[in-house]
Image (cartoon, rainbow over all chains, first blue to last red; front, side, top):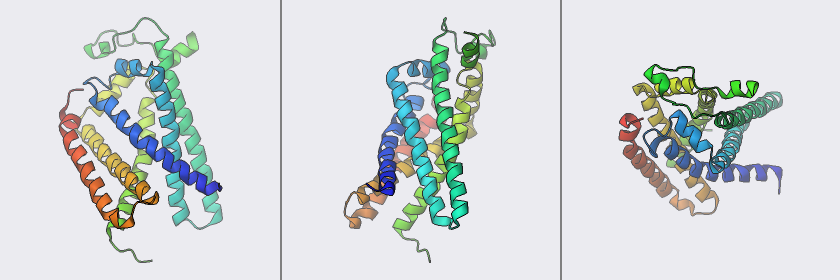
Length: 143
Length: 114
């Protein structure tokens, strides 16, 4: 299979993953329950390996799909070889940063769960124990 | 090249614009999730997303996602060999389905408990 054809096929495959994934993502974070996007609930959800796997696939699919789409637009409007190669490098670097950021975010949810005891996530709203909840990054350093 | 405003061209422009918006949106989306390790900060950001303007923005985001996603399904069907004469039917089906889902979501996205 030619390189371009494979890239195209992958963009379509990621599109299918994203349509299904976005429905799940939106439903889980907005509709499933009133506190669906609350910190504790999100953490609880991500403690499940199935959700971790879901978001790992989702992350790769969306970054690939976005980069492929933007690259297609660049190919259409930009003609100069040098400009195109600069845009290509920029897209690759940006994609890499986004994937790293995504993995960082996902790993941070796991680090927090490793720390007992389960805190009251709404406490800061009531004005008590604002700093009582440990940060994932802080834990990574001190544990 | 002269552009003519046909259904196909409108669908193409809609897909391209929504695609660019969604790609750009990923950056602030990831950035706000960057603080997920800090519950208090995360909740502060969530409070901000709970303001009417942000809630409306999220509804708009859902609309853009629906436009891009459902239009994308239409595109994949056509590329996979679905008859081209159906492309307008597909487009209007995708658009109405998206509009319907968006309409149903309005009360929850704008005023639902969070």
